[in-house]
Amino acid sequence: MKARIAIFCTLISISILAGVLCFPFKNPSTKIYDCFLFFNELEMLDIRFAELYDQVDHFVLVESTETFQGNPKPLIFAENKERFGPYLDKIIHVTINEHYETTDPWQREYYQRNQIMRGLKDCNKHDIIIVSDADEILKQSKIKELAPNLEKNQILSCQQKMYLFYLDRPTRYLWNGSMVTTYGQLQRTKPYALRKMRNLKKSKLKRFSIRKAQSLKDMGWHFNSL
Image (cartoon, rainbow, N blue to C red; front, side, top):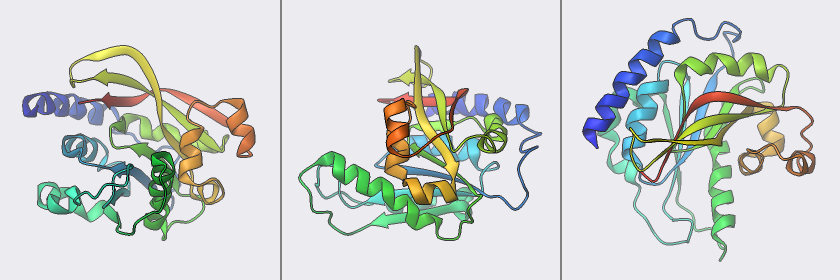
């Protein structure tokens, strides 16, 4: 696994060179927050932080003491913080310590995803918010596409190449995973609802009063079942 991560990080360095002229449309006062739920995917954090550290202002990592099924779990990131020392200055670690009363795992996931908002207290309405799972990672060279497209749309769905089981084993499938919006829009929509619109189905967009949405192609990677 470590060898594959090293190979992938080499590819990341190429991606970084390709994105030297990032943010040509980004207002200097606008911040970018990369937000995601974390279970135990430490290797995914290695890749995510290496890829996006220079391109986002903050990572919002949400970690719960309960699984989606309601079982107790340790705070894995908290126990391994020293591993990510070079990145800690940009990491906002949101911990969910309270019990959420439900028998429905989906409802508990929705609740946990909405706690992303706890890490966004200092945002202004124009800040750019990326909402993902831990195994969905945007290419740093594509971050520059977010601001100009958000000028024309309320939400963006990011198409990502799917990898299955191994970092060096891409599939032919594309995945709509990471979602992007402004903080102002997220306050109205909420993270769980934003996630439900990732395939941009008209019925979902109408339900959440979204009139303008766009899918962006070749935006990153989805590492499934690694």
